[in-house]
Image (cartoon, rainbow, N blue to C red; front, side, top):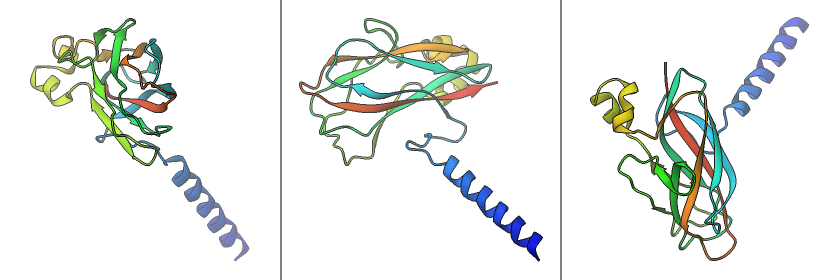
Length: 170
């Protein structure tokens, strides 16, 4: 009877620990997509390049989107996006879009999600490795540094948490 109670207590403790470990502040957009990097406290008033270190745990990864969460206040005018190179060169978005706006986000807003590369379009265009033509700056192996660059700052102190998601390609 005592052994049964001990085993039950251990099982409950393990289940509680597993549930706590699975809590995400920003869930991935689709099954199989993983978080590969983040910039916590991104300065939404700075137009300087803000580096984001990425790490791909698979053979290769394809960045599909990023989320912006936890604004420190109401965002009204900050615009920008992610780039593969410093100084706002080589936008990761394959359409070449260089601005995303987060106007209207408030501290009580849940999240804004910004698409970078449509994985279905990559697969339709051939193998995922053909992303060199479909999403040239979204495909990477190993570790990579990308940059948040704002074309326009907020005009006053403001921060957000930014998380980058990718689809692992094995």
